[in-house]
Amino acid sequence: MQQPASTDRLIGKQVETRRTQLGLTLEELAARMRLSEPEVLAYERGQRRFSAAALLQFAEGLDCSAITLLKAPDESASGPANQP
Image (tube, rainbow, N blue to C red; front, side, top):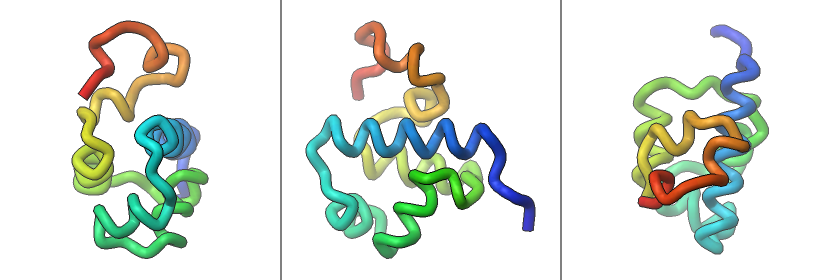
């Protein structure tokens, strides 16, 4: 298995940011996604690789597009295009 890359850390940060914007706890997001809390936390910390399927699953669980999660933090903070 490949090691997580800087891209995985950036996506993980976006996941955490979006989760907190929605007011969701780690437990609530894990329940939405049918994952364990440690699994979600590992993604948020960039300790797990994001497959295309995982990216889409997180986007669905966070009521946003996959594109939103792929944007750099400075890009996602601006503009209405990032709304669900």
